[in-house]
Length: 149
Image 1: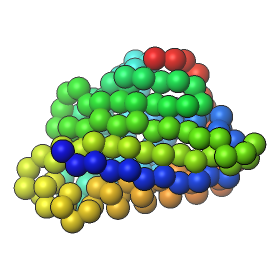
Image 2 (image 1 turned 180 degrees about the vertical axis):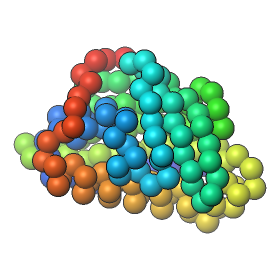
Image 3 (image 1 turned 120 degrees about the vertical axis):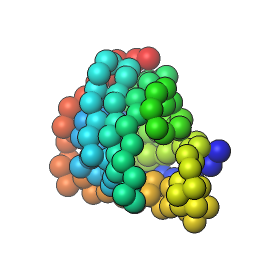
Image 4 (image 1 turned 45 degrees about the horizontal axis):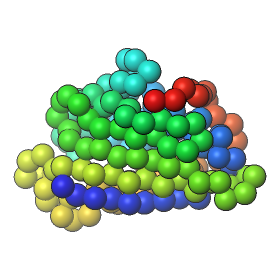
């Protein structure tokens, strides 16, 4: 099991950053390799990814969601094995620190080699940077889900 921890500071209020993160179907706009995400229930998402030529589909279950604080998940079906949490930390009225903690279980030789070379960590860092650009360029979220799990 590989562990990744990355963070980024975004120039938006905590509510804006959190609300955007709850819009899973928008993830392909800032997460490289994510082709699409379908929100199937309030707590279940279906992912289709293609990274380094390897296409995968899997379902993830949101295990904890507290508005403006955290979203935690784990994969439950499919070709990827991971669990993680994203937390949102108010720095001031207009800035938020977004922290990602991810446990990733490489599947197969290509995943294992990529993981050993730091690919997952690099990908997480770049995705957070693209999230920063995405939300800061908009200034407002594309939607919100304020429910609690």
